[in-house]
Length: 46
Image 1 (spheres, one colour):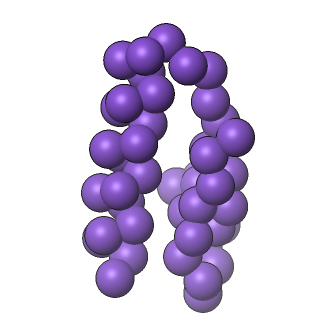
Image 2: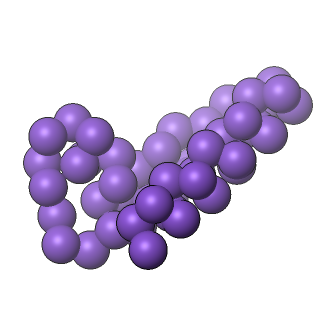
């Protein structure tokens, strides 16, 4: 479910921030946040 992907992404990015690890989020989830909707919902943390 798309909502699950968002929850997992937020958990991961929160943990990375708490550890001071720099990261970037990419993939269709991040492009959707910026207004470019895609049919596949996925994300990548770099």
